[in-house]
Image (tube, rainbow, N blue to C red; front, side, top):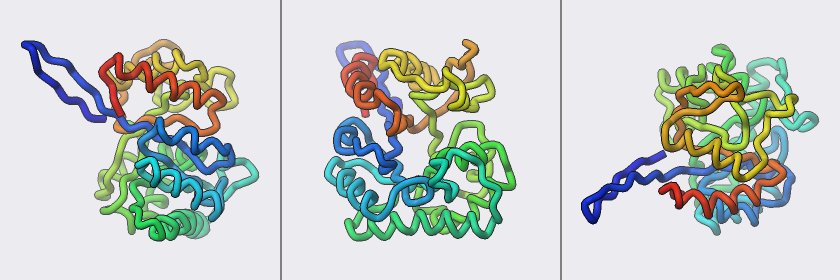
Length: 257
């Protein structure tokens, strides 16, 4: 997130420029409608969803809309959509992560596009945020991308700490359509209040994160949270309505994409 001050007519306006990212290529078929409202996307590359055909289609849409492209690798688990922790050998996980990212990167090269970032998906994202051993395994797997690609990570997480220690370029990520616990973990999807689906509620959740760098947790506690990019999930039921609403409301709060 960028904050800048524009001074004119003897007063100043604080302006915010944010990145909205979205998980795409996961079988929802809504990518064309969403592209005008986002600035970066995380494309499923075969682990939990997606194949060469879907990757090519979403990459083409991203290129046509000036949207930055990132890889969205996960545990190799299409059965559970990558939302279940897998206990698999480190070598197997490393091989899968690299295969997923490489598959997308080959398609990007055909379009002469760079791989802007890597964002783990689902259970893998949550696990490396709290498991130091697994975080190190993941970073070793993507070590070849250390200097040329951003890594999207949650603020205050173990993966963020290890990535910085090992010279990775990171962007802190927050979720506009998910509720938080007081320890900055996401409320599990198994709970009714995990998701935020009402456009006005999403705006109310997002504004404190952008303007004050804090999040109001599910218990009402206010916790510091830094974010450079804000995610909305491609399978959120009202995603198009949410993004359309935000496109109209964010400028009123001096926030642009």
